[in-house]
Length: 171
Image (cartoon, rainbow, N blue to C red):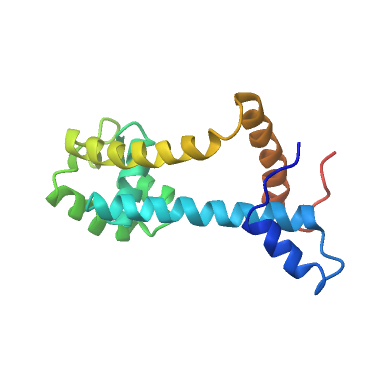
């Protein structure tokens, strides 16, 4: 079966005469990953604008949801790769919107945790649902077996990317 040419195929055709050593499979895979990442980022940005949810607030809600809706500010700061003092402004903004509340910690009475409210959960879930629908639309071009295979192949590539460049390659 011959695949229908896409914009990346045209990109490769244009560059092969200029860079004869260009590997069309490597260039095709990398360029397609870049284009898909840009597309999904643009969808996310549109969704957040439509939902009046700034990206930094969404990211904080997402980190909190990933901790089952409750976390210490220091844990959120670590998840978001931020200085602990910087998370306070984010939490304060989400508190004003009614998306989170501060509650006493169950493990340390000197600490205050942050918890998602129903409104915060709904805001996060609404954004996730729309983004997820686009991801499913895109990957709906593949069968379930193909999706699993793609995920497995990308895992192998990512494991190499996660290694320091001077580390020996795994077999």
